[in-house]
Image 1: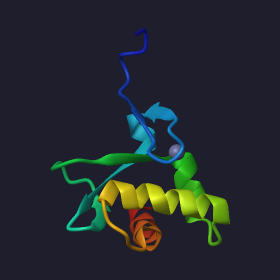
Image 2 (image 1 turned 135 degrees about the vertical axis):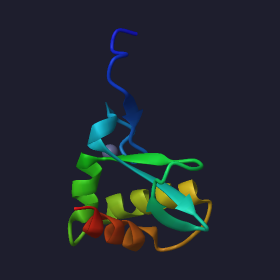
Image 3 (image 1 turned 180 degrees about the vertical axis):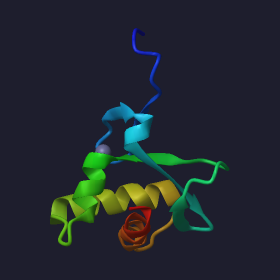
Image 4 (image 1 turned 180 degrees about the horizontal axis):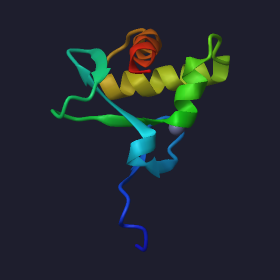
Length: 92
Ligand SMILES: [Zn+2]
């Protein structure tokens, strides 16, 4: 318990812990993926995974895993990777 100064959160995809400032915070609202606005349950994605998702052609094995994770977070089945890519384009 030495490192309590910087807030550290876990990425939902790779499950690695990162400083909060290096993570993108999202949530699911009405079964849509949106940027976190301070309300309700949220989850984090790290910059490594964002880079991976940002690639035009995500490797199949990652694609399935990312998709499954997002469906689990939203408790719904949808094309969340497309929504996530849209969010990433206007975040930068
Ligand atoms: Zn990650």
